[in-house]
Structures are given as C-alpha cells and as structure tokens.
Amino acid sequence: MRALDGEDITQADLEDLGFGGEGEVQTALNDAYVQLLEFVHARDARRTDPAADRAMRQSLQPYLDNIVAACDREARARSS
Image (cartoon, rainbow, N blue to C red):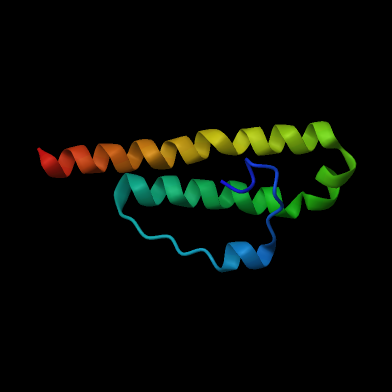
C-alpha cells in the first residue's frame, strides 16, 4: 500500500514481510510479492523516469485487489 501512496520500498522492507495463506490467497500473495520485487529492483530506473515510476506504482494495484478478492472468496466459502 505504501508504494501506491508514493513512498519508496526497499529490499529490507520486503524481507520483513510475512505472508501466510493457502490456496488462492497464497497465490495472490506470491504474485504481489514478485511484483513488489520487480518494483524494488527498478528503483534506479524509476527515479530517473517519473512516468515509469507512476506506471509501475499503478501496476501494483491489481495485485493488491487480487489479494482482497481472494480473501473475500475464502471468507465466503468458510461461512457457507
């Protein structure tokens, strides 16, 4: 979420993340983590190209949306 708000994320920030889930939720978390890694590794390029920075930040939103959607589906399945 910090990346979407314009903040920077470092490799150390990613190393501090803990992901837990199963099935579709774990897949969504893993996909988001890969995108965050790419975002972090493109830091130098993003600093010199504001348009690329904005585009990379915006490209993270669908991955976060997928996490929320997977969690919602899992919650509905448990309550059924």
